[in-house]
Length: 288
Image: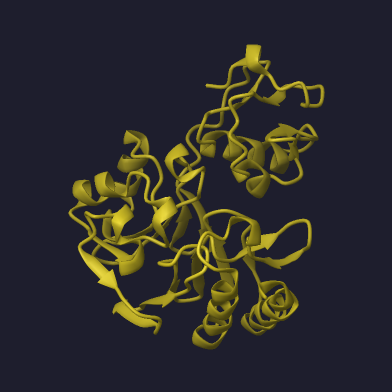
């Protein structure tokens, strides 16, 4: 629970607040950009929710927060457990982000015979029960080494296979299946892995139908109102990441981008494709 005695002084007046245990993962700003903003090295409430939609966004952020740093001073009752939160038919945001993955979002794609868990939320009993009701997990798809979190516990609980790129395997030694090389590969029917080295050497994008689960390689920027990549958090090679995104544009035409960090977006496939190529073109001069 959020701790009012640690309320950040940068919060605007009102019931909602962020406490000073915040690790500035940015998850709240991605889920409710109209409510939360950055203040120095942490997030704060910049605008109190003024309508039911904004209030719901604040609750989603509070239940996703990895440090449980978001709360209300008036102790208003929360609207039940919101996660798994349906994003589109058969695809859910799992909330319950882990501090071990710096608050990265994880997702569940529901499929006959068991779902696809993309990266890992906390192994929280309430969430586990909810995922069981949605058909469980057959495959755990890791986008890169940073967002492994409780993946091993999820895999053990459901008896699931675990996929990771060989170059990031050291962070998931329990993985049962490896992707190698740079070529896109269909690992199970309807699930394509596109290697995108850059953020880490073993980063991948998982493409499932119209959805690209992009990890920390590609996201939507609320400020720019456009696609973005994180040069300041590129641990392997920025030049390689731009080349990877160009290959991603050639390999897939999704309409959804669902990242670990950063904003989410849905656009017509051709528009998303063109924006991705434009991102590479404008950033390429910075890769020298």
